[in-house]
Amino acid sequence: MAAKHIGILAHSAEGATLCYRTAWMEGVRRLGAHNHPEITLTGVPMHDALEAWATGDLETLRAIFLADARKLAAAGADFFVLPDNTAHIALEAPGERFAIPALHIAEVVADRAVADGRNKVGILGTDWTMSGPVYPGALGRRGVAWEIPEAAERATIHAIIFDELCLGIFTDESRAAYVRIIEKLAARGCDAVALVCTEIPLLVAPEDSPLPTLDSTRLLARAAVEVAIGERPMPTWRGGAV
View 1 (cartoon, helix red, strand yellow):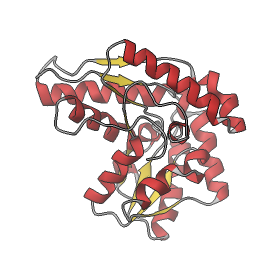
View 2 (spheres, rainbow, N blue to C red):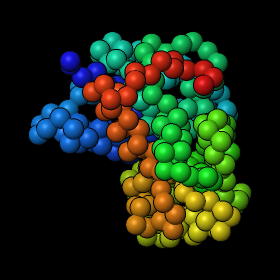
View 3 (tube, rainbow, N blue to C red):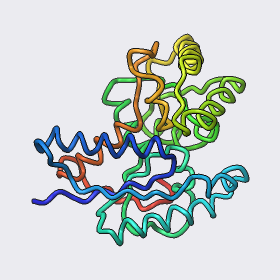
View 4 (cartoon, helix red, strand yellow):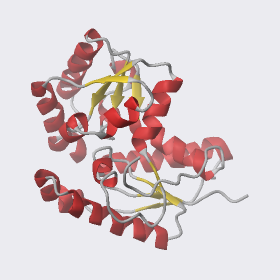
C-alpha cells in the first residue's frame, strides 16, 4: 500500500522546518534509506497574520489557514499537520470545514503525556497558547492536570519566541531563562513540561530541561508519518470543536 501524502501547513518558519525534517528522517528510519512519505509544505509568511493575532481576529486567521489547506489538497495531500500550537486556537474556532483532515498537535502531545504516565504538565509556548483553551482542553479531556508560568514569566517566554526563536536566534541566556521557569514549574508539582511553541525544542533540548519534555514539533512529525504508513488512523477532524 502506498504511503499517504503528508501536507505541512507552515505558519512559523523554524517550527515548520523542524517538522519537515523530522518527518523526512522518520520516514527514512521506518522505510529505509532515501525513502519517506511524500510531503508538501506551504510557505506563506507569518507576517501576514500578525495583526490578526494582535487583535484576536480568529476569522481572518482561519481564512488564511483554510486557503493554505486548499493548496495542500490541490497538491494531493491526504491530510495535513500545522506545526504551530497557537494556530490551533483558530483551527478550533467555528467556521468552514478544512478541505482535508488535520492531525491536531495538542491531541498528539496529550496522548503522549498519558502514555508516559504524566499527572501534571507545565505548558510553555506563546502567551496565547499558555493562556488559551487548546492545551487545557486536550489535557483536561484525558484527566491530566496542567500549569502555566506566572504572568511575568509568560511575557519573557513570549518575547523570546517572537524576537529570537522565530527568527532563528538561539542564545544561552534565553535557554537559561527557560530552564529557570521550568524549575519553578517542577516546584509547583509538574512532572513534565510541554514545549508547545514549535521552536522551543530548538532552544531547550531534553538534557537541558529540569523536567522530562514533550516536544510538540517532533511528536507531531512522527505521528504524521505513522498516519502516512498506516500505523495510526487517518484523522477525521476538519477544524472546529474537538
